[in-house]
Length: 143
Image 1 (cartoon, helix red, strand yellow):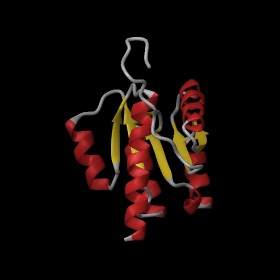
Image 2 (spheres, helix red, strand yellow):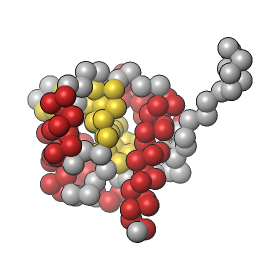
Image 3 (tube, rainbow, N blue to C red):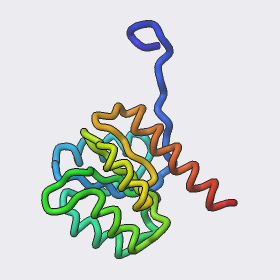
């Protein structure tokens, strides 16, 4: 039970899937990778887009999901998503932002980004979004 007497929400859990996480803010990378580990995933965090892309290019199939911030110096999450998709067209990508415009949504959809998440997300929201996307990808792979 939560403190207000309502049932506690249990976040959806992963099963050791590898997630690449990119954000230019080191404290966020630390926090989100820690949250992802607690949710049962194996995150690899980056603050540098070039390093994240090199890791992805090295072995794209090792990552079940790519999670990237939208706004970063030097590159955007959309540009990073485009580069990831040029390596692996079916890579599941989630873009996270504190401010999503209608244009961001249109661009993400046209690129093939699978989901957009508004910051700040709770652990439950993040876990549910990732779980839902990975479940859909797994179901599609079996179909």
